[in-house]
Amino acid sequence: MRKTTGPVLLLVAACGGHPAPRSWGPLAVTRLGAADAYGPGIVSVSPSEVRFELAQPAHVIVLRIAQDGTIDRIFPQRDDEPTEQQVGWHYMEAPEPEPGAPPRILEPVLRSPDDLVRAARRAPPPASPIVDSTAPTYWLVVASDVPTSASQVHSLLRSAHREYRSVKVELEALPRVLIEGRAKTWAAYYARAEAERP
Image (cartoon, rainbow, N blue to C red; front, side, top):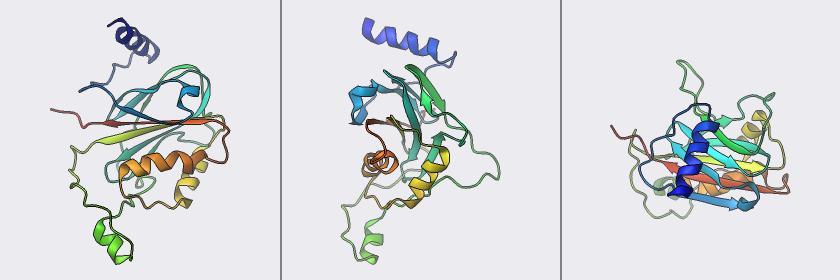
């Protein structure tokens, strides 16, 4: 009990008074790359926010991925925004969409079996249907030793070959798209956030 209580108190203190997202069960975080080099990574998620811990300074990219594969770039938002985050707890919240705002950074390119057949590609096994607002979202936090500006993130995602059979395949491919070949050390963490229950 002590081990879980301590970090939670630090999290609340370090996040400027933001209450911790409600948790519906234990958080399953997938770690890729040199995950131990940058620390535990994601510690809590909700559909609208993510909290993560870094054990050493790192340049950070934060994306939110919808069940249909659509990507929202959460951080960095501007090119003049420093991407290096210091050791400790960090909190990022997805902005509410503004009326008349342009569409998300990248629309989904997950392929259905019918789409793949029409394109003369082998179809993956059938997936379960996507459920509107109750579908989970995923948070991806990438930590590395190389800065990546908002326009670089946008450009790298736009130029990448983005046909994935599932959100899991997309989540595991995105860190490599964004930093592989540029960074000496990198780690990525992703976790699923269930839609909030009434």
